[in-house]
Structures are given as C-alpha cells and as structure tokens.
Length: 294
Image 1 (cartoon, rainbow, N blue to C red):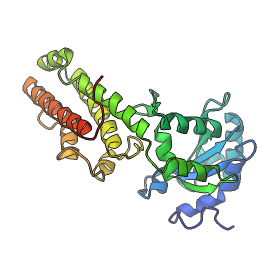
Image 2 (cartoon, helix red, strand yellow; image 1 turned 30 degrees about the vertical axis):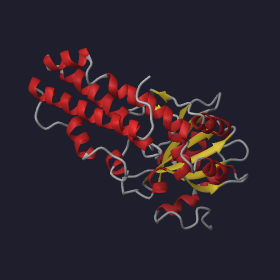
Image 3 (cartoon, one colour; image 1 turned 90 degrees about the vertical axis):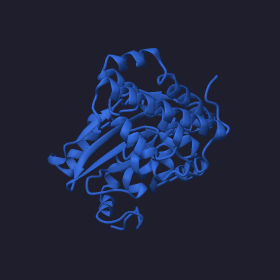
Image 4 (cartoon, rainbow, N blue to C red; image 1 turned 180 degrees about the vertical axis):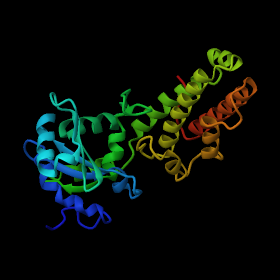
C-alpha cells in the first residue's frame, strides 16, 4: 500500500504505514494521527520506540483495544493498554510489531484544545505521575504538537494546532520563569539544606540538588523560548540552546554526578556550586525581563 506517512520518516520505520488502518480502528469515529517522539524530532536510534499520537473524542476501552491489536498483530505482540477510558482524557496502547516497540498515545482532542489555550494564557501545570521523573508538565503537549509529523488529519485540526504553537507564548514563558526560578532559589541557602550538608546526609542533599537542577532546566528552556520536550536526552537538547550560563552542561553533570565523593567538604563544595549556578541563572532571567521573585 502507499505510505500515508510519505517520505518524512527514514526506513525501516516507514513500515508503520501497515499499522495505520489498524490504529484507526482504536478510535470511535474520526481521528487524527501523527508520529511523535524521537522519530518526529529526527534523533531516533536503534533503541528508540515508535510513538504514535491518536487524537479523537472517543476511543474503545482498554480491553477492546488490546484484543484488537493481539488478534491482528499476533499473540507475541505483548499488548499493554493503560490509562483511564472514561472519562477519556488520555490513555494508551503499546505493543511490539516486527521487533519494534510501538507506543500509541491516545488523547482527547477537546482536552488538547483546552490545554493549548491554558498554556497560551500562562496557566501551567505539573502533575506528579509514576512514569516520569520530573513530573508531567502540561506544556509538553505544545512541544509534542510542534514536532509531530502528521499522518492523517481529516479536518485539518492537527495542522491548525501546529500553527497555534508555532510561536512560543509569552504568558507561558513568564509563568515558567516566575514559578521555577522561585523554586530554584528556595533551596541553596536554606537552613535544612545547610544542616544536611554538615551531617553528610547524602540522600537528602542529592534529592535537593536534583530538585533545584530540574527547576533550573525549566527556566533555561523558557529563557530561550524553546519548548521543554521531556526529560530524556536533556544534555543533547541543552547544548543546542543559545542562551546558557557558562559551561552549563558540564556544571550540571558535576552537580548531579559528583566525582569527589560524599563527605562534608565535598557536599559543601557542591552547595557552593549550586548557589553560584542559581545566582547566574537568576541574573539571566532579570536581564531578559523575567521575574525571579514576588
């Protein structure tokens, strides 16, 4: 059959076109479909799965989706359907096909519209869920839409979304800068962090460092008016940004994976480096017209 994906994806991933008629049956009624993840962004490797986004107003239940995939693809497909079917906001069905993992993320098209609008208004949200390290940020959806490669778009809805997110929303930028700069600034001089350092409480201090680093990363992406696309391969994404603190990737690596040990003096040095980094990022925020505190 002729590939509905066209030539935008490199071989052997074009074989996904064989699955499109099957995935179309997951929804109840018309749906839009796109390729996302590393293949859409052009940085896939041999370990990458294939991410398919399916946008609809209603989908079949998890057991029905699993039965459909297993019956068509085969018993060795190891189908896993997850998420809440009713009310349908987002869920998924993942499986193996020709020795490649396919992850189909199902999203309610009306909820997508709502999230885009909220983010454009600066109403950002982070949910702590078990399948992500930093939490799930609602504005990652805008990154997904910007990079996704459309397969099917019966009402040109997906194309309109891509136009909507082509420009980074300034209200969202200011909300991210304000919220996460304040989070980053909270800990470096905090009494509890200082006493944990003197006790060599490595579990507590390492968690605090990670929390500050994660906040700083959100700030850096917003400063560059670049959508945060998720926590994987962050080192590669960060080095592409033009506005960074000096030696930023190297300093991040040293903070989250110190090579000098976990004694009191090493933890003191780690805290000093963290303080210096946060102060430098704060200066960048203020220089760019952002707000770092109330």
